[in-house]
Amino acid sequence: MFYTLFHSPWQCDFDSLILLLQEGDDLLLLQDGVTAALKNSQMYLKLNTTLANLWILEEDVIARGLVTQISSQVLLLNYAGFVELTIKNQQQVAW
Image (cartoon, rainbow, N blue to C red):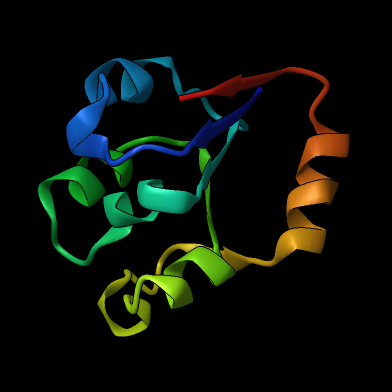
């Protein structure tokens, strides 16, 4: 399953999203969702407990000036990679 988080984790039911994530799922953080990957934040610590693949849209991190504040454990992805994830996963859930 492919999940996308567009909203700030403080403005959505982030805990429910975490509960849905399973091993092998892909989660892409984009727009304000990139704030979920801030180093040592409560939200990132929750994300880090999942077995899902965690991706972040590089352009959105740069646009928000957060490059040095994002955990190095998160895989950066460009728009071409976003398209590849969309093609790879037949089902998508947007948050």
